[in-house]
Image 1: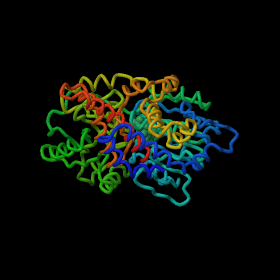
Image 2: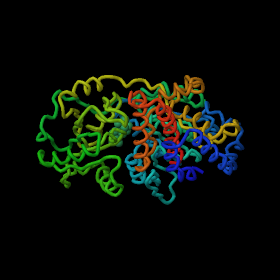
Image 3: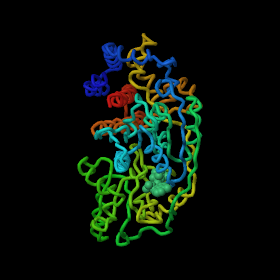
Image 4: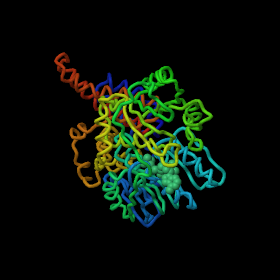
Length: 498
Ligand SMILES: Nc1ncnc2c1ncn2[C@@H]1O[C@H](COP(=O)(O)OP(=O)(O)OP(=O)(O)O)[C@@H](O)[C@H]1O
């Protein structure tokens, strides 16, 4: 059903740019009628045989979307503390000793690391990410990227790592889905203490039993008072963190030329084979290629993705900048982002008993220091994305709505991150209110779709500016505003199709 829509994305886009509003609305309505065949599939949800009867069409009760998890009385253990405090280690110990289980992490590298670790201790574990599926004979355990979490299976134990990402504007919905939907007797959540009140609030609704365990950092992390200065000061075990591929390669070139070191490079969209090769060395036995005595690679240049819980042999993190382009604008890194990235230095059990952190540029040091000394702001909202099936159920409750109206309604829920405490607000939020909160819709990790979304985001961002331009004729304004609304819808379609 979803791929059916995808095939028409190009037409939809062209239509949104050049067609009139009525045409576009009718187009959506027509498409929606032709989706009637999906009804049978949706029925299997509404006729669940368990004792609990849920209203799947109630989009304000996302916990009811996951009947299998609701049939369980889950014991939820929140492992919280600073980076490198052993939260994941303790959760994984439980996973290891369980008869069946799933690990959900934010990164393919992490899933890779955990699968490797479990298989090594004779716990057969499958690896499932958006890009690969490696099945192991007799495996009752899975290590997956959070988007791949299976909410239809039954597990004895589950771990969701970096749970603070539930508040992430782009991927938070996957963490919410895993949190609400994984049917496990024991659910371990690892992350920042800033997520505790929100998680507790969410789990009050599910009726799960919650306990919180606090941890302390296992090895010191020292913020330096001096910047790197020159590239000749680069030393073994350094990791420079940059925020674009172009910058990563330019830094690699400079370090290799001026610093006399060989650099390995890691960033999100590295070609899969290169990445796999690098990961194998980077993650192999915790001896990364840049610290392995037998390897000539002794420095790492990485994107900020390494902040999502990776264990590497890094002695010093050097921020190339404390600003990044987030798809909309160049902004300062947030406190949690700085802490997560800095926390990669001096990992417990690595070759470096203490970690250091600094910046390339002296002007960035104040933000680095203040961020490392501040608590992360308490999370208030979790991401939420209704599934296509739910939208379909919703449409059946409102038979007079066309697909266009259904999408508009669901976009409201989708771009307005869920605050369980203020659920009602979501329902009552007007379209204009929602538009204010409309955020980059980068839910897509396949490069092609990501590129399309980036273009849409940029258009979305600039259309209001054009709208206020004195050079735009009055009649064009309407077209621009209409385009803007359709861009949101197209973004949603891409997401659904993903
Ligand atoms: N009790 C322990 N014995 C041996 N190694 C440990 C122990 N606790 C933690 N470690 C090791 O210390 C490193 C950091 O631990 P872990 O990844 O669990 O920290 P974390 O708090 O989850 O970090 P982050 O929040 O940065 O992801 C890992 O390599 C882990 O294997």
